[in-house]
Structure formats: structure tokens, C-alpha cells
Image (cartoon, rainbow, N blue to C red; front, side, top):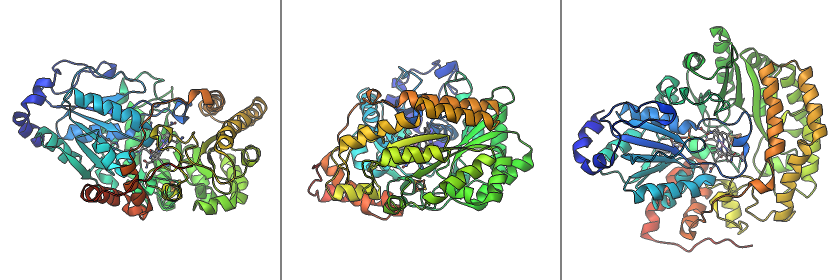
Length: 528
Ligand code: B12
Ligand code: SF4
């Protein structure tokens, strides 16, 4: 509160810009606090195709919710704007914060530039600015790198005082500092019922114990697992049960954790707490398949309501998994999936194509195998050198990256030259995999299996519609999107950031920004 009250006098220009005495929030709620400074929190719109369009994956952006709660604690009035469903409000706020994933950078920068043209200060944050703070700063007054909880109050105070600028580096604090659901769930309460499916999401852990070469997670959230106390999670579930999305007595929550099985003791403790609470719910989570290695744990999570696990199998080839530092064992996949099915837990599998070991036949082999072991829905993607990852360091270093247009970094475009096939073969193979796995015959057999599993009707319907959506949506013609080609000077820094140990990626990115102004270096440029 203090920061805003103090800052009011110091921000006459900002207050004049604000036309917010009686504006309405999306879905018609009046903004609280007539005199409070106003913050727009914006999620840019997804472009083209993607998993976000499929049934069961249309979730509210958690970053905006958490940031909204942090800002309200400081006395700001917040407008939550998910441009995938909300229109951009016309009024000029006192500050705008935009969340940026790599494939959203083109839209995010365009929005940021527009706001700044209207005189509104902009702060950018999220996974992409954390790895490329220099690039983001060209479109913003300030950038937050990493997790925002430890620095956002300072950003707001500086914004209120008209002195917000540069990089604010967040730290990896305990989950206790992350606002809880009761502080933000009202922002979603008046959304139309089917806008988000699922709408009830929670994050109980941050971080992952693995270090797969292609993944940003431990660069952003660190290695290992920080988690909430299981009893706190149960409290959050109770709040959601009361105030969240429900379909009659059916209540479902999706845990957004990077890997709910990053700390198996916590997985068990959370499940026990849910069972003890007597809460009846169904839940889905992302988790490494190692969870299914322990029969007692599978039984326990099932009793606690687990109905779907999304797991990154990534490949059915051991050589490929070794290549990307993924610890899975393909010869066990079938057994693990069966164990989950025995407890009525459905399995959505993530698979990536384009590794150096992948040959032209990998698409059909994978589809056959995955279908045969009974995976219930599959998400196929193309290996993508995401900023900050080992994969980026290796491919950029070897001059194999052919596009630095961040709009193409959505995991459905081949932005590099593969080792054992052409880019066109890789791209075409992806669409063939979708057509193959979601072709009529296979989908029909899967549906019959799901009927035989006697799932809860809502879960059964969900998996059927999810399969339908995957089959319908994943087509090349849906993949057009805006462009933003990275500046070679930023790429030079990014190469250093990506080559650093994962735990130091953010610090290295920030240090590179400081040193670049001192001594610019020669650029990395797309080759082949
Ligand atoms: C849940 C999730 C999803 C959900 C989406 C949920 C949603 N609507 O937002 C689903 C399953 C749909 C999804 C899809 C995809 N995802 Co995803 N997803 C995640 C995951 C696991 C958690 C994100 C989350 O909500 N975290 C909780 C919030 C609170 O954390 P946060 O977003 O990091 O925000 C904090 C800070 O970053 C910061 N911050 C964030 N924004 C802002 C803004 C401002 C102004 C400030 C100050 C601070 C700030 O403050 C927040 C609080 O600390 C992350 C992994 C991760 N650890 O980030 C991957 C992740 C974001 N996903 C990723 C990817 C690649 C994808 C896909 C492209 C994959 C694909 N092709 O399927 C798709 C994209 C959508 C599409 N085109 O279909 C990558 C993104 C990498 C990158 N460089 O952009 C990540 C990082 C995982 C990875 N493998 O590296 N995903
Ligand atoms: S891909 Fe999954 S298991 Fe691997 S580092 Fe990322 S979150 Fe962890």
C-alpha cells in the first residue's frame, strides 16, 4: 500500500492518463479502488495451431493470476487480460505487465510498443525475457527475470515513483511466498463456463530434478523441487471446490507443476493429505513417468483422484533419450502405462521428433509403438532450440539453426537442420504422425478401450474430445503467425547464456547484458 500512496503525488502524468474511475473489468466486475493505480496484466494471444486449442488444455495463464495477487497486496487495481479470450481494454493504465513465452515474443513486443506509444510504462517478464533481457528491454521500460515474487513489489513501487527501469532479477524462494488461490480466484469467477477447460489450476511445486537438454524449466525454476505444504494445497483445493469451475458434483483440478513427481515423497504426502481430507475430486498433472514405477504410489495417487497424467516420453529410442539427457527407459513404457490404466489413470504422452538419432522412419515407428502400448492421447512436437537450453547452445554453436524468428519457436516448426533427414521431411513427418495416431481406425479402437475402462463419464468424454481436437486441429494450414527475428547481437549473448550451467542461466543472461554494452562481440547468424 505504502508504495502506491507515496507514489501518487510523484506520478501526476500517470494519474492524468488514467481514465479509470468507473471502468469495468472483463466479465463486468467493477475495478476495485477508485484511486488505486491501475495495472494491466496481459497474456498475448497464441497464434496458429497448438495444444492450447485442444480440449483439456485451455487454461488461464497462472503468471497473470499470481502477479495480480502480488499487485493487489501493494494496493494496485488490476485488470487481468488474456488476449486469447478478452479484448484489449481501451483505457490507458498506469503500468502494463506482459508475460512472454518465446513463441509469443512477436505479439508481446508489438503490444509493448503500442502501450509505450500511448505513454504507458511497460514491464515484461516470463521465460523469454529471462533468457533475453536485452532484447526485451528494447520494448519495455523494465524486465523481470526469473520468478517475480521477490521483486514485483519493488517494480511497482518504482513504477509508482516514476523510476522503474532496467532489469529486476527474481530469486528462487520457497513456495510459501507465492500467493494462494483465494487471492486470485475471483478474477476467473465470472468467466463464461467453457472459456477455460480446465479453469481450476494450481501450482504446488516449482523446479524439476532432471536436466533434459531441450527444456527451459530448470533454467527458470531451478533443479530439484520446492513445494507447498500438502495441507496448504488441500486448503487451496477447498477454495477451488467452493469457488471454482464445477460440473454438477464433478470437480476437477489441473496441477501445473513442471513435474509433480520431482519429489516422490511430496507426491505421496500430497496424495495422502487429499485422501485424508475426504475431498472428492479428479485431478490431472504433468509428471515424469518414474511415478508409475512405484505400484503403491500409483494406487495412492489414484485414490487421491488422479485421472490423467501428462508425461514427456519424448522418444521410443534409448539412443535418442541418451542424446538429450532424458532418463526414460522405453522398454518399460508399456508396463508403466498398463499400471496407470489398471488404476483408471489416463496417459497423455509428449513425443519429440528431430533428434540427431531420428531417421526418416521415426514417425511411423513412434505412432505404432505409442498406439500399441495404449497411450490415450499423444502430443507430437519438433525438437526446438529454446533460448537458454543446451540444445540451443549446441545447435547455434554448430551453425545449424536456420530461423531465429521467435514466432516459429512453437515446437511445430523445424527451425534447424536435422542430422538424418531434411527439414521438409521433419515437418511433414510431424503432420503424418498426427494423422496416423488420430486416424479414424485408431481413434475408434481407443474410444472402445476407454468405454471398457468404465471411466467417470466426464473423464471419458474429455479424452474422446481431446482426441477429436488433436485429430482436427493439427494441420499445417493453421500454423501462420507473426514474425520477430532476433537481433544478432542478442543471439551472441544468448549463446553464452545457453552454454552456462542451467542454474546460472538467468544470472549469465543479466551479466551478458551488462557486459555487452561495454564490449560488443561478433554476431551469430543463421547458416544452412
Ligand atoms: C502449464 C504450462 C503449459 C500449459 C499452459 C497453461 C497456460 N495457459 O498458461 C499448456 C499445457 C497449455 C502449455 C502449452 C505449451 N507450452 Co508450456 N508450460 C507450462 C509450465 C509447466 C508452467 C507455466 C506456468 O503457468 N507456471 C506458473 C507461473 C506462475 O509461472 P511463470 O509463468 O513462469 O511466471 C512467473 C515468472 O516467469 C514471472 N513472470 C511471468 N510472466 C511475467 C510477466 C511480468 C510482467 C512479470 C513482471 C513477471 C512475469 O513471474 C511469475 C511468478 O513468479 C511451463 C514450465 C515452466 N516452469 O514455466 C511450460 C512452458 C512455459 N511451456 C513451454 C512450451 C514450449 C509450451 C508449448 C509451446 C509446447 C507445445 N508446443 O505444446 C505449448 C504452447 C502453447 C501452444 N502453442 O499450444 C515452455 C516455454 C519455453 C519458452 N522459452 O517459451 C515451458 C517453459 C516448458 C519448457 N519445456 O521449457 N504449457
Ligand atoms: S522435460 Fe520434463 S523432466 Fe526434463 S527437465 Fe523439463 S520438466 Fe524436467
